Structures are given as structure tokens and as C-alpha cells.
Length: 445
Image (cartoon, rainbow, N blue to C red; front, side):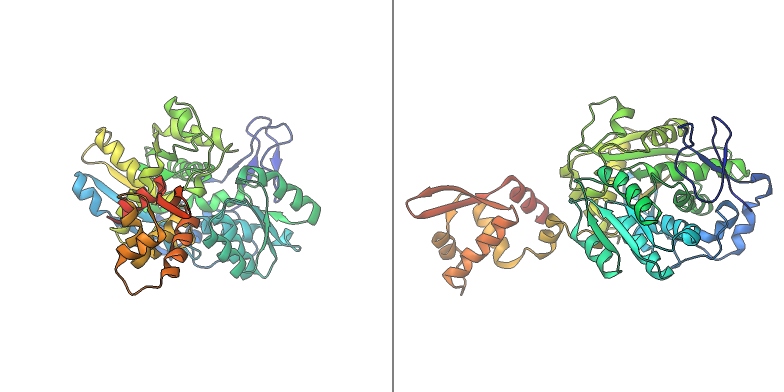
């Protein structure tokens, strides 16, 4: 079944290689012959993205790593809230994130035009996905990533053989750079903002949610807005094929520090600052209008989450057996806020989308949380009471430890941003906790 690519404004049709916008400036739309789709035939097929092939582009050969078909888990937290809450665990995808859904479709679709390879602009997850799927396809991959990116994602991209180009502070600046690279080197660009085909893979999240839950609400971590819009498009198509009658309410969750979409919904002043939830650090999302359309058309809303709530979200998800990156962990404080406001009814079915694994993070505070122990932790607890100098700390530790080793620990804690020099008296340098150090101690209990 051929997908149709057309401009909703001037009606112009496009073929295999597509830009994101028509020559008239309107964003293109992808559709199918919905009358010929029987969604109940999907039940007899293996789980995964390509289970829904009638609503995906025709491709010469599927490049797959068995993505999709991720589990839906009833949340213990829901019982405590008196609500029906389920977690869609996208960390189970091959590279640990929902972007594998995008990569399998975009790479499969682009193979005939990717002799020189593929390129993507990404803040980490889509780059890791492209690296894996391009490797599987035997084609080179170029990833344009910002300077602010978690080390774990960089390690993953390098291990999978992709070429890394560091450009700009956030992913926003890399999109046009990737477009230029695609044109100059003859690469197939799979960046969601530059090629709509990959989003067709992401929409299969909606199909799985329909099959497993038929949710009334879906809570989605939101950076660029592409996943939010993809899920919306998936439910629109389920309505088109007669599988559902009503759209679930879609709820966008953003960090308070970077809130271009949520602030528009809530009528607050938007911010565009770096956040610990780096995958949500998208200052000027190209897909903002489409994301807003998805929220408004579904009757949904948006929630802002503070930096101090990210650890709580991560810990509560860990209590469910899921280790999620900060950008995914925002869904839990969002759920708690909405529940406190009595936003939900008792019989609602609420889906939380965990988009990416915490193993991809390796940001400094996550590393500290799992590796700062023993002597370093004792030093932090000593400094929580008052400022102290090295010899004084050594005496207070009462451990068989060399005096010089205390200063090594102090240097490392200072490099982590957990302690700082407070003052000097003669040759004595006194140290105290930073605000970050105090927050860290609080999370350690």
C-alpha cells in the first residue's frame, strides 16, 4: 500500500524523497488508503513496529533490530494514588529509546538514496539509533550532536561506529547544519524536523497503546515535540480506520528551565535554559505548532517540572523496576501534580511514556548518585554541619587513611561541584557544601 505525500494547501503530490515542506511553504502530510486497512488483522502478527505495515511506507527491504512491541506495565504508584496508571517502557528497544521506531522506518525508506550514508541532527537518542541501524544496513552514519550531551550517549554512538560532529549548544543549531551536510555529501537525512518519514515509525507507539490499553490519557516527555505529534497522528489514523472513536488526552511534560511548548499551553513565560533533562533541551522546536495542535485537538494539557523534582521521578520509576534518564523521569512528578489537582477520574486509564534508559545518561549527578560513597560520602556529611579544612577533616574521619588522600577526595568532590572553597585562614583552605552538594546529600537520605 503506497503512502501519499501531499501538500494540504496547494495539493501538490511528492514522491519518495521528500522535504519537510512543500515548495509553497506548507508542511507536507503523509496519508494512506485508510478504507483498505483492517486493524484487527494486526493481532495475528509478531509484535513490533512492522506489525502495522499497512500504515507505514513501502520499503525495498526492512532494516530492523526487533524494535517496538515494548511492555506496558501496571504502575504500583497508581494503586497508591487510586488511579489506573500504566508505564510504556521504551527503554526495552534495541538501543534503549523510542527513537529506534524512527530509525527502522527512516533507514529502511532511505536505503535506495543513501549510498554515501545517513545523517541526523540529534541531542543523543536519535543519533544512537541511527548509528545502530546504519551499522545494521552497512552504511556510514554521520551524527550532528550538541556540545551539551550525556557522555553515555556519546559512548554508544562511538561504539556503534558512527561519525560524531559536535555543533552548537543545543540540537536546534544542528538541524540546518545536518541539512547542509546532507546536501553537500549526498547523505540521506533522517532528522525528524527535516524528513517526516521517520515519524511514521514513532506513531506505532499509539497503535500499541490502543491494542494493550485503550488509554484515556497519555503523559509524554516533550522536547522537540516530535514524539507527541507522532502519537497524535497514530491516534488520528486509528480513528480513520474505525478502531477508536475518541482521541485520548495528550499531556506534554517539559522542564521548567526549557519550556517553549508547555509555556504556550499554560500561558506562562517560556524559558530556554539548559536543564539536567538534556534530551528536553530544545530551545526553539521546529515542530512546536504541530505539538500544540496535538495537545489542543486532543483536549490535553501541559505540565512543567522543576530541576529538584527530577531525582524524585527517577527514584520512583526505579521503584517500579525501570531505570530512566532524567528526560523520561519528568512524567512521574507530572502525574503527581495532576493527581493532586484532581485532574483524573477514577476509571481513567493513564499511560506514562518512558522514552529512554538511564544507562544512556552518565551525566555528572547521576554518576555521583551511584559512585559517591565511602570516604567521599563521609566527607560530605562532615561538611554539611560547617566548613572545615583538610587536616581537620582527616582527624574527624577516624579512618586508617593517609592525610594526602583526603586532599585527593576534596579535589574530586570539588570537580564534581559538590563542595567549594568557602574561605582561607593563613595557609588553611576551608571547604563547604555547594547547593548542589546539599541537594545530593538529601537524595542519599
